Image (cartoon, rainbow, N blue to C red):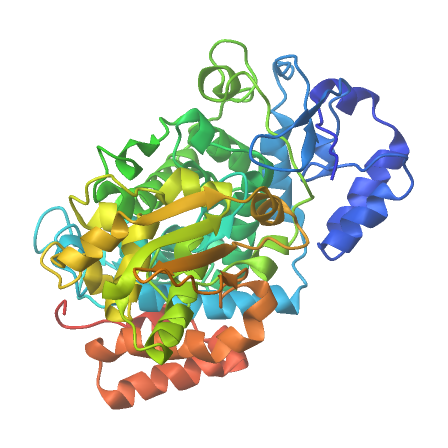
Amino acid sequence: MSALSVSRHALRNSSRSLSAQAVAARSAPLCSSSVRQLSSNSCFSTTLAPTSSVLARNTISRQNRAFSSTPVAMSPEPAKPASANAFDPEISAMAEYIHNYNLDSDLAIDTARLVFLDTLGCGLKALEFPQCKKLLGPVVPGTVVPNGTRVPGTPYVLDPVLGAFNIGAMIRWLDFNDCWLAAEWGHPSDNLGAILSVADWMTRTNKAGGDKIGNGKTFTVKDVLEGMVKAHEIQGCMALENSFNKVGLDHVVLVKVASTAVVSKMLGLNEAQTRDAISQAWVDGQSMRTYRHSPNTMSRKSWAAGDACEKAVNLCLKVMKGEGGLPTVLSVPTWGFYDVNFGKKPFTFQRPYGSYVMENVLFKVSYPAEFHSQTAIEAAKRLNVKLRSLGKTAEDIEEVTNRTHEACVRIIDKQFKPMDNFADRDHCVQYMVSTMFVFDRLEAGDYADDSEAAQSPLVESLRQRIKCVEDPQFTADYHDPEKRTISNALTVKLKDGTVLEEEVVEAPLGHRLRRDEAKPEIMSKYERHIGPHFSPEHVKKLVELGNDAEKLYATPVDEYVDLYVTKKVL
């Protein structure tokens, strides 16, 4: 699919008809067909920016985006700064979407319901791990904030900034919440750390009387879900065409930006203040990916999203107190984000903001593993059945070839790299596949230093005999908006010379193409994760409420969070 990268210069000269098309796009359901409809009146395929305020960069240079079969038109010239009093249109587009877009997608809201429950369950599961628990709670032990944020699964009552970190760190810790894969990768439900913390704190504070926050707004669960849809959309649409990992930045920059945008509206800030807050998020120092890659892989990758949520809430509260913004934080020469952090290139966009991302988000249903490995693990599970039918086990495997996509190779292909800690193992496709072959399972506990899998000589030996080979077609399908598959294909060669038929899995269980198949499994996963924290009767109550969409939507958020409060951490 060819694309039109859009600029401020062309914005001034763009035709009324193109602007009208963009306006129509914002009011139409966001799907691939609507984008094609917008392109049908032109002789070329047009990739629209998120709203009409970001339409148009007039110098077009067709280039193939690295690691994708999709050609993207980009200007070779640096982005031109906006006028002194005008914000970068990319920032204005986000603020316009947050304040003016009418969310009317039942599919997006229902999907958000499942994401919400799944994400909370992942957070409670993380409380079983001491490495996570030690980072949670107040800075000063025993501190209780009046009308503060409750942290699910704990007795903690915190300010909304620290509450955002606590909830954000919990839900990301095990790498088991949702996923979005494109030019940039990420986990949009990470934003729930900021959204839920602020919604809970504001609701409790405004119910208590006294000084009101955000015009006295109190929130229901549905309000939280609507905020999640918009946070997903900003993070996901930014990720479609803009690779932060290629310049060494971590994807949590998008969590910070998306959370800032949504939380600003929740706090009662107007559209201009939302622009200020978003610009503050962009100028903030951005996390590098160092902690995700050998030889520096470490647990910070598990709390990086919590850190982003914390900063987002903090920045919004500063703007709420009167701090201004930086209108050309992205585009200003020398000092702007593009020149400093993005190779002097402007952002490009594939589609308008709407509800596309939530409608197409990926669930991690089967395994607590980096998402690019999910189909490889599922393929190994299927091959175990074939091995047993032949009277064979993992000990009989000579070697395994994994035909895969580029992102898998770049992120988690660590065939010969040492497995020094939890963070190394849960981001190594060879370790995860080897564990499945040896033990016919992959659980969160299998990444721990003292686990049976980590201590297994066979797992380590087999891990070093699993090689990854990129298939360009798998890579193209990964970037194709109509497919968005995450394909892996395993071929096993046995020590006796037998070669098993290749096992191909293109879409994992949590993919949109398998959504109906996944729904009962998502709820079962949620029930398993909350089970250790509550009585069977209380678990049943939570599951029934989660399945009753209308009742859940209407529940005040503080009353809902109270259902997860415990007297002590597990």
